[in-house]
Length: 277
Image (cartoon, rainbow, N blue to C red; front, side, top):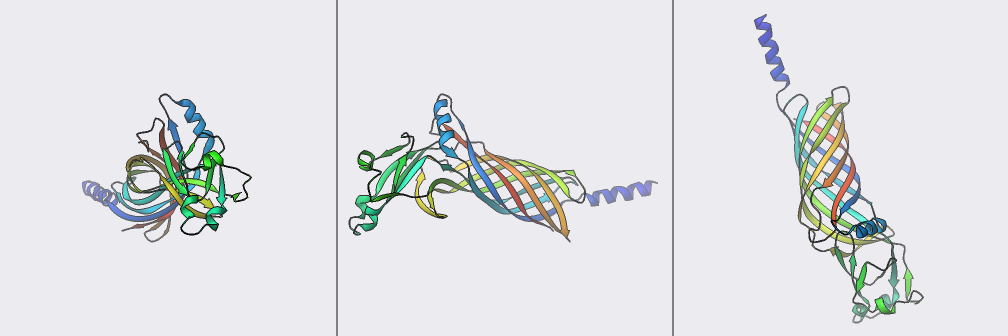
């Protein structure tokens, strides 16, 4: 009996020994932000009416180490996007710019500051931006004072303004297997260090994006809280297919100098493959 006990114990140790795995996954995401303010709730309500969520993208590589039968630690390198759509804007194309000589085109460039929930966006563009609420646009251009919507040189364009931030993320996640069947179910939670690598505001027309500016005073380093629920299906020797819906929330405000604190968040559905080593 003692011999059998020792043999069983050795088998258990072998069964639970650490195991490495590599993974790759991609995800479409739904991105927006949560606004807070200590004394300006009217602005929070206002920005929530003129800004909208947008579609973004995430993806990357991960390294996993199974420390126990049901417990895995994961890290890696990911690229992610966060952002929002800036609504209630009417945007006009300016034919005067198109018809001007190269030496005079600069006379038809509008320099504006567009204020939104994250901060100020400095825009230099041939397009004329008109705020339907008359609260967000300050401009050094004469268009502010002499803008005439009936001017034949101006025509409304079907477009939208997107505010986009790009990050490189280094996550530290813990996975716990709650169902160990043909399809394994894991709860995943952890933190990520996020490093800003892209800050741009784009004008989207006919699925074509034109860079028109950037948002000022954005923090370059942030931390996010992550939680997800993954479904793992073995498909071949050492290969596993994974689907993982998840939620991500910025613990720090994007712009610490602003009275309104904007905390981006996203809902994602990752899918990818893991290779056990």
